[in-house]
Image (cartoon, rainbow, N blue to C red):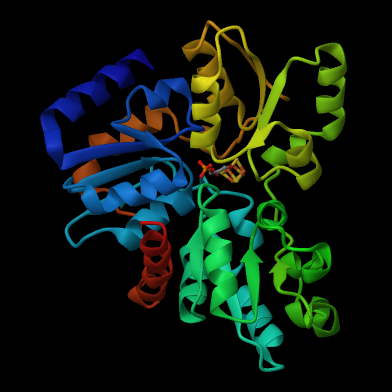
Length: 345
Ligand code: 13P
Ligand code: SF4
């Protein structure tokens, strides 16, 4: 690895402003140390427009690089060191099933606005753009769900059912105004699983996707920790089950979690319910506080990006095939992403 680190440093020096390396907070310390910009999904998406670099390398999962490819300017090339680093939650919503579901839900004449979490494919974002919808991240889900509610009769939120329900709780949307589509929609024919009688009077319809990494955190663990030490704080990402979010002292995007820890008084004991790489980095960065993972839970896909495959990409970056999608997908997907950036400017 030492050889790769030195090689990356040398290439960065030689390329100067022609290269920008972006990293999501769930990347390992070794990779993060080599990035120029770190951030949550919203911050990284926002950065693309400001970058002058000809080559932008995304250390994260594929949907993040794809979002950058949608927002890039002509002449910019987006890369990812391992294109098999996908997000299992994003893979739970396929574009054709999302489109079929929207058609079924709209058959009675209601206007259904799709709102997709940024953890989704470019093709899904394209469908969402074509159906007058938008994108959201965990940092702006409340603002964007409120926006989407105002655009039509109901919202189809996808793919994360937990983020949908946690955001609905934050906005005070009543239980009887929302529903989650049955799990079968993920793998099956939507016509078999979308029951229009059950969705007709609902203002919020959630896709049944979820993040397997955030399923590791439980109410039981939080209750046990609080029994042992009532003074502890628990903060979690809103991809956690709503019961876990309700049992926590706070919830929010990865940037929220970082700021909460940074702002906590010296001596605080904080258990953090999110991907372990970020929690370990926070523990090392704030030695005056006790920062612990609520449970160990690593995202294997985030972990596919390594110093060695970053070095291998940079070695041949001028000839490396960039991440891209067809213009037929990108044009409506860009509209969906830009709606979010405009609403949350
Ligand atoms: P953030 O947008 O909060 O960084 O989250 C992205 C993600 O994939 C969380 O699992
Ligand atoms: Fe996807 Fe979960 Fe990994 Fe985030 S932590 S990239 S939502 S699988």
